[in-house]
Length: 473
Ligand code: AMP
Ligand code: ZN
Image (cartoon, rainbow, N blue to C red; front, side):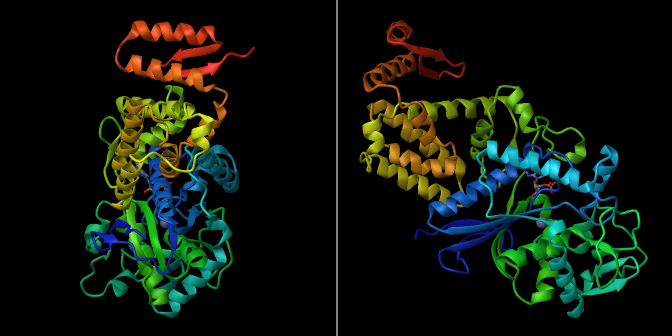
């Protein structure tokens, strides 16, 4: 197996991935809080982990991915204070929390489907896993890292951190880590840095469950620890999330999990950088206005163009949303599709490709194994198609389909849908593509006329590509 390298936030280094079980990877991705639609920034996050999962599968790993759904306990501030986000929407929209969560989860999953983000092996909802959380809190109390008070069960952060009080993941002191956060100074907490594992005596809270400490609800952080361990084991290979989760959410997840088990919780923490808007600010729900996938569709960009747009930046690099970038992605999407449509049946049935495809396969594999360098991989795929066009050679199809297991454009289905284009017609289309590439518009128009005379519709797209279909008779 080729080595796979990935940046581990725990060590701040690119490391070779060494899974706990040979050939298998457990992958936990922090999921959405389902109280508003997921914006393009959130969707970038899940695209990154879709690329990661597919890249691992390209390498032959079996990946067990779990994504949670936060439908209770995430307060308007990440450090416990404020209102429960799902309940805030429920009150505002006069719905039950369950209705709110179902509505936004469904929208999110529909968006993922149109982006060709494959569903994880398991979606797990916080409200359906309360016993696992109660069990884990019991273990943390037994290990003496949590204490029970009338307002809740709190994690004793200072005891866990010890003298130097520096976080393993953020490398920040507690004061730095919580700077800018409005810490809730419940009189019951031993320290303002302590956070709630279980919240008690909040009669206005709509979602409540019985526990050994009284009726209440879980804190947001314990949900992820409990579900990750329940479904993937006490130590997992890879845990993902956005960079905003480093200082609080993931730091707290490590503290809770490791104080209960005495074992490492996660071997590789992998974080994505933000999608930022045209003004350079992080796209976030708290900003009030945030772009959605449906906004892109309304501007004429397909969801798959957004997929390619995100693939064009490394997961660890900030990415600025831009019309120019999206136009480029939309045109690359059409470029791949046009090539796929032109693959004739005899070549599609062949098992092996022409020789020069091998070098591209090497470079593509190298790129994805090098800390998930998707922009490089995308460039290699485009270059291969360009060379194939130049040589008038479509026997790179198997290689392109393998690349597509990560690109996720379903090019096989695109080709099959256009399979009624006869080989002699395809030759004319290829000649026209070349003429257009050389700006020989006179020849391109002659060939258009010929195609139309033979019963084909020709549509020249604004991005420079063209679509050909047999006219319905
Ligand atoms: P939330 O529903 O707010 O918990 O966010 C779901 C995921 O999206 C989390 O892993 C966040 O870190 C991530 N995320 C939020 N905003 C952005 C953004 N602008 N760019 C990339 N990822 C983001
Ligand atoms: Zn989480």
